[in-house]
Image 1 (cartoon, one colour):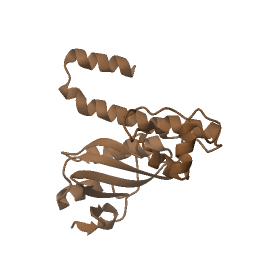
Image 2 (image 1 turned 60 degrees about the horizontal axis):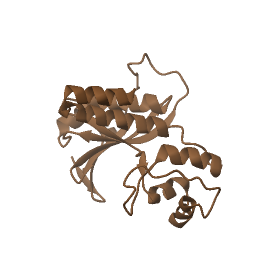
Image 3 (image 1 turned 45 degrees about the vertical axis):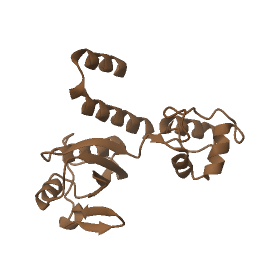
Length: 208
């Protein structure tokens, strides 16, 4: 059954039974050191019935909470895995093994607002504003990459994380570049059916 919590429709797959031992298609039961990776997948397709939820659990998604908000379906994963890559790759595979479901986005998001930068850096918005303007810190804060003429521009978190590691001594986010690349690939996959052959070749050439 769906339950309403803080404006979200939520279903916790783990409450439908205990998560099974994970054996990825990459080969056997994992023996490498593991840790928990938390991330969210935005999913295209409806999961609002028990059959879909049962199928997701049987596919290996007992470590996820599924729900929807404003018509968007999401899956919050807390997956124990040797690496972020392995965790995300296996989660996408598990979700998409259920007919009618397709992953279209990965969070944490790679395009971030000033407020989100402040949250991730553990600073106030005013502190980040001063860093951006060069009035605090060593300067050289990365330029925004989108909505650059609006009052709420967006920065690439990969750029900010690299800058913060050198300028602020903050540990670099090891998964930022991978997250950005996965989202780029998911978006290309989603849009490619609407492209002509020449347009597809052009996009492929940009991706290298």
